[in-house]
Image (cartoon, rainbow, N blue to C red; front, side, top):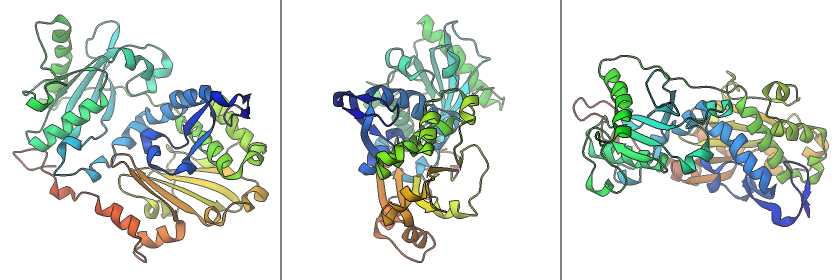
Amino acid sequence: MKTCIYCGKEKPDNEFTKEHIWPDALGGDHLPDLWRTDDVCANCNNMSGLFVDGSFIKSWPGSAERAFGAREYLSPSRANAGVIPLNYMGVLPEVPTREDEIAEYWVGPCGANIVHIRPNDSAEHWASYAGGDPRLKRSHGGRAYIALTSEQPFWILVSLASFKAHFDKAERFVVNMDVPPQWRGFFKKPDITDPVQAGDMGVVTTVISAGHVGQDIRGKAVIELDVEDRFLAKLGLAIGHKLLGARFLASDYAKNLQRAFREADVKKRRLIPLRGMVYLNEICLGGSERVLFWPGGWVLLLNVVDQHLVLTIVAPSSRTMVLVVCDNPTLVSKLDKAYRDGSVWITIPAFGQAVGPIPLSNYIAHQTNALRLPELVALANQRTDQKALPPCDANDGTT
């Protein structure tokens, strides 16, 4: 028997599973064991993945962050391996679809137009999830259509690879060019003799035609308020336990983190006293966020500030989230010196690699050119010179 750090209940060992503290979708699989735990029961793990991690990752801001900077690690010589997260633009409320379906608009590499027609899950909770209820996607992936905007072979392959990776459970159609031979097992041309596909093409044509004449298409993206604070509470609870153990879980502040993690109601969650600054606030760390920022990566920093253990997250766009993990000076004083002085990790989902821990002082010295750290030099050398990539448009050379 052991106690789940998320729900606080004692359960048999066989009800516990491995949990990514930092989500796999944001590069957690590449981080060291500090960012994983086996002290979470399967029920809480599933709940967290769907409603806590999932709410942030699938939100409009989370979706945008995943796509931000993804081109930084594209290889000009390996287009087939180039998968870029797509930009979610929202539901298309003004285009005609079948009564039980909705259409969403996504933008792919080089501005490729993507329309995804999927079952309408109707529940209000899923309105803020890009792509809707992820459970429904497993059995009813819908139909996804891509209209490519570049004739460059490189960008065609990157667009198709990204399209296939994102809509892996959907029927996939390429609208405006012949499918390259190596991709014909994964994509089809729309069949206008099929009444369903013919109806879908009415939606797709509306979107493409609007783009050709410069007409706006209204997309509706629902942003759930404070979606990141529940995510932060989970991170603080798990990393606090990982570093400080059971004594941390018994503290009043850890109990507040646990309450915030489990509270789905935004108004009630706002009444729980947590300390930090969240994603949608315009915050500034006195310019330090620019030093911490790493192109295309998520930067995680743990350090002690005024006898508080603090987690700072710098997203690929350089937006920052900050959370006090522990406010008990006695517990914080027991931390390893590496965490008291500050440790940094960088994980890059698009590249499938992470580095760290790196002492904060060394990281700052590297970022300000006072010191060259071999692991960061090697990581920086993997970034692509954007001028080396083919232009998106074969005719005018724009990127």
